[in-house]
Amino acid sequence: MASSSLSTKPFLGASAGDSVSAFGSLPSDLTRPSLQFLIRTPASRKLQIKAAGSTFGTHFRVTTFGESHGGGVGCIVDGCPPRLPLSEADLQVDLDRRRPGQSRITTPRKETDTCRIYSGVSDGLTTGTPIMVLVPNTDQRGHDYSEMSKAYRPSHADATYDMKYGVRSVQGGGRSSARETIGRVASGAIAKKILKEFSGTEVLAYVSQVHNVELPQELVDHETLTLDQIESNIVRCPDPAYAEKMIAAIDAVRVRGDSIGGIVTCIVRNPPRGLGSPVFDKLEALLAKAALSLPATKGFEFGSGFAGTYLTGSQHNDEFCVDENGRIRTRTNRSGGIQGGISNGEIINMRVAFKPTATIGRKQHTVTREKQETELIARGRHDPCVTPRAVPMVESMVALVLVDQLMAHYAQCCLFPVNPELQDPPSLLSARRGIEFASPEEVANQL
Image (cartoon, rainbow, N blue to C red; front, side):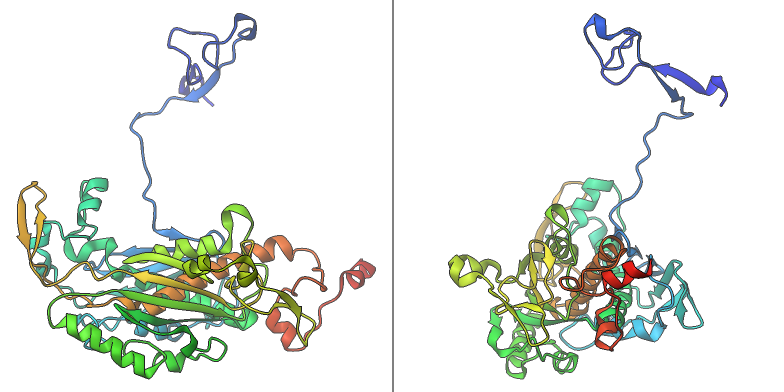
């Protein structure tokens, strides 16, 4: 390296005139000999800050891209295992559940949300390289947002994006729009297929509350709940009677140009045991982050949730037992399938609260970018209640967390033969299909 490209600089904390200490002002007996660092002299001293916030996951990494009224939206999935059968049809099922214009209680924007896979799949199998999925925008109406380019919509991201970046995409809310979730749903469909193929794991979500219409928990059997039950009505509530009440509540505010919120309940049936890590990467903490990263979310409950605070320890504890297959189970599941931040194999369950849609068709007080008070009637096409369309979004974020943690668990805990008395074999589904795994003693004898 040429000497002209290097310069001698004192360590942080030392004054410009201090030629000795790399640690600032130290006693004289500690400053001989002086410690100096060679630092490359940059051509420019301007700080460069990389964009952040659009990538999720560590081992199964997903980056979403695109804006509501740009050319299109999508995702790049890096770390997907190779040789997984995958087609655009696999992704389209969940994209169709998420798309706008499904019914009178969703936004009337007309998009087919037809996806195309551009890389990472060859002859119907994943190659292990990055998968790019793109969905074009075909029904943009940027002119609907001309007034909002000057005035901030109450409770929307307009003002905070300006406060952070000093510039923003005005049409449709840009990256803050729920249209960004197309990339999450597409990648989540891949994650759900991995879970299904690996361990027979199912991720199902449904609407359990709309405004003040709350579905009693005892009316839904999480052991037998099916996707057909959830998709049997436009509000995605598995109970027909309560579904009608929820639809009526949405219709009542829709005709007034207003909005309401609700709750999505999500369950994970037959999850692998051992997912999640102690302390900072507890599985429920990762699920909370994933769920609350979705647009319009305002609350997260896990297992017994806040209702558990009304119980005593003796009432709340899940006692252990051994089932007919010799597996350690819990008699109850107030823990929600996770104990100590690690999945125990029971049904994982959580609830995600969604606020009323921020953009409504009623006059509201606000201010302009020039800090002048004004009134605004938001135009455009918006859901009177986001909760029904949020169902596949919640499923996708949960699946992304589980696959990422499955890969982490496999790398750390399944590199060497597992303890079959306590740990599950690498693939639960393979075990159920009758594939036998060698015991540690058998493996040791073969070495």
